Length: 79
Image (cartoon, rainbow, N blue to C red; front, top):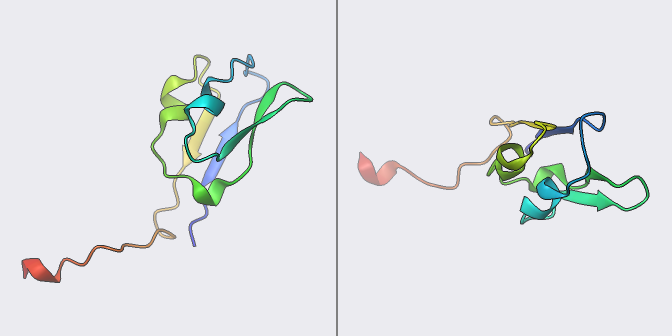
């Protein structure tokens, strides 16, 4: 099982919600109490990196756990 590390630097975050809106798989959720994004479901991350690319303050970082990823494609047909 993948163990992605998604970090949001709350000190640099301006609360623009861009990372939250960019996350189409609901990994990043919005905390209405402190008006900041939170990482709710890191294992569901598709590592599209849209949250990282669109953050205007470079608050979001993702360390992808490639060892935990499963490869579903079989390359035997190319032998």
